Length: 461
Image (cartoon, rainbow, N blue to C red; front, side, top):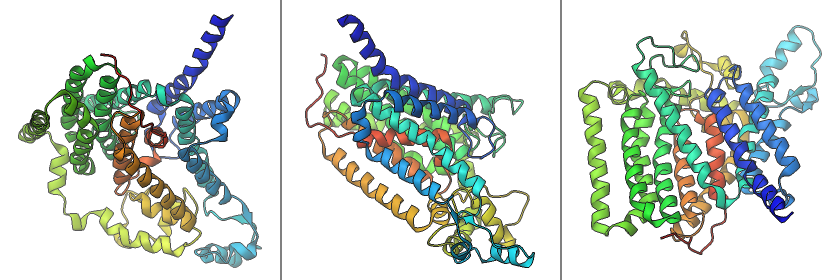
């Protein structure tokens, strides 16, 4: 009887990991695009719904009564989006900033002003609300898994990133130019991996660097005799990312690469310092930097470093994204402080799009998530984001002040590194609007939230 209960406990203990793996696989299949009408995104959302439903039934009540900050933040975002869908009386709606043009249309055609939701694009806002299920489900399952069972989840995230990298390499070398793409790529011929956008692929590749370092540190903490092997493996994998990132053609990824390397060294430094003398550890880091630079030079010599070629071939002043900042700010201010509604950017931007920007392509997002958040969600969304950033900063300071051997610190530090990379990538693109990156972001923010113990983790010698 006791043995049966033990098996039952073990089964329920690992159930959340199975749910997260299911969610990761679904996101790998259908979570690499930010288009609302991406046909495979329904797979990810169904998986997220299953995770939330199972958690509501089986997750211990104590975890629901003490939800972590990431779960509360994702729930607050969903609540804000839901509020934008509530119908408002005409007297209130017509007085909101930015609604005069639409109100005038109804007057001109002789229609009475109807009750309308705050958002200008209700269907797109519904889509945004449903999309919130993915990071919320990932956060719930990560918290349910518990702080002592996160190592397999770290391995799963690395496997996902490496799978996207390998798929990107196949896309790069494929002569037919289309067999290995999951979506119609925004940049044909680019190594986009599981995504439709090379910048999103590049951001995930850079995120792999601190994750490799975290895996080495966690394995060394688990078994001391794995320290050397784990460190060498992490270094090799990190160096392999350099050419994989160069062939994406992503300039933002190239600019983030040095930061990713520095963060990886910071996360993995305690392992190097324990295994080597300080001078020897410094030499290992320097050797890795030299090898990375040599790989970059080799790819430049072979004319394969598309990221570098695009970086130096671009006139920054003429770059469309730089030119968009002023009209995007004006658009955001025209709907401030209530916003135009989540998911409304593509439709609303066409109202104010400058004549100089008219061409065959159209913007589905602002390529600057800070400005798009301000435009869509208004003041409340900015305050929510500000609260999240303050919490992130406080937790980051606490984690980097803790001893590296304290339980949860290594993953927490890796979480700060990965989330920082994603947030910086969001200043020139929109990786967080893809379900796959949103899922990764939710998991690593839960690592940041886990209270760290001041006790060291015992190692098996």
